[in-house]
Image (cartoon, rainbow, N blue to C red):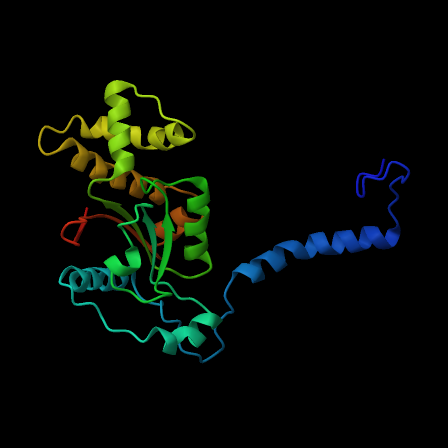
Length: 246
C-alpha cells in the first residue's frame, strides 16, 4: 500500500525529481516558517517600531493606564482611525499572562489600545506549554519588552485548589490538571501566618508563574538573562480596579 495516498494497488516510488522537490521543500521549511512568523525587518534609516522601549517604560505605561482606569478616567480613543495601521503589523508593549475570568480584561485594566497588549489567558493564570509558546512568540517575533503575570482577587481557580487541598474533593474533566498546577502555591501560602489564605495563595501563584517564566528556556530565559525583557507579576483587585505589583 502506498504510504502517501493510501491506495492498496499503488506501490510507492520515488523519482529523482520528487526526491529533489521534497528535499528542497524540507531545506527551505525553517526559512519559510521563520519569515512567516517574524515581522519584516526595519529598513535602513527607518524609525524604530513603536514598542522599541525599555521594559521599565513599558511597565510605567501599564501602571499609568491602570491608574486612569481605576479613577474612571480612561483615554478617549478613535478606534476606527487606527485600524488600517493595525492591519499592517502589531507592536505590543507587553505580553500579559492573565486569568480567563470574564471580569478581568487586561486591555481595559491597563487602559491600552488594540495592538498594545499581547494577551494570553487561562484559568488561574498558570504557565502551560501552549501559553508559553505564545509568550515566546510575543517576545521573539513581536518584540514585546515586558511580560506580566496578572492574578486577580477572588480567583475561582485558586479557590478550587484550596478546597481540593483541604478536602481532597474530586473535580470533573481536566480540572484536576489545572488545580495540580496551582496547589504548590497553596501549600506555600498555608504556611503564611498573616492575611487571608485565598489572597496569599493568589499572590503566591503569581510569584510561582513569574519564577517559571524566568527559567523557561530557551527563548524567554535568554531574553530575560540578556535584559532584553523584564518579567513582572501583579494582582488586580476587581472591586477597586487597581493592580498591585508584587
